[in-house]
Image (cartoon, rainbow, N blue to C red; front, top):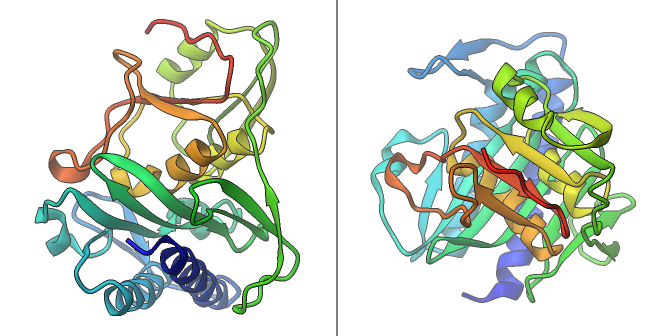
Length: 265
């Protein structure tokens, strides 16, 4: 893989998809349909998915592409593949809460090595560079590169007072019970892959997820977090969360920064 090209293409497509999403987000009304798994889908999901998938297939025709909105792609199996959630946080989008993202990632042998997370309503853009290190881009995001890129790094946690981030739309008693095992001084709620990015920038230390997620939900944020020195592990055995699993479904997991003493389930 040409990582310089990959970084450039992912950035361009994420920004273009973000523009398409925001055009619909700012409209007076939009239809909400329900997929076979009872999750919502909007015209913004579909427009962003089309734009990204066409762009990725044109740039990387020999690389397998898995995208949430194209169920036919879910039967593919490959050691190296691109994976996309064109609008992660559709519920946040529908409620106009702003915590939604465009997610694009590249997986190599079960590991998300490169990725981009763009939150167009929040004006935040996170991605891995060609060398795998993560940055947050600041300023007005032009399609031509050259904006200010700030290296990001996870916080070294103080276990006597952790900062925890949890799901805004998928909180449950099991997650709260697990969080109670820790000494917590700050608690945030966030939607979509922003939770991974808050750990990557040092704004939070811990994100436990005891609920169903798919690999396209997590891969890009996972890549950004890894590139900032963090990690994502399975909840059951605290081993690294891997990708390319059957049906692309994740186990429960914990994302964390450096120095966090993880509690057993």
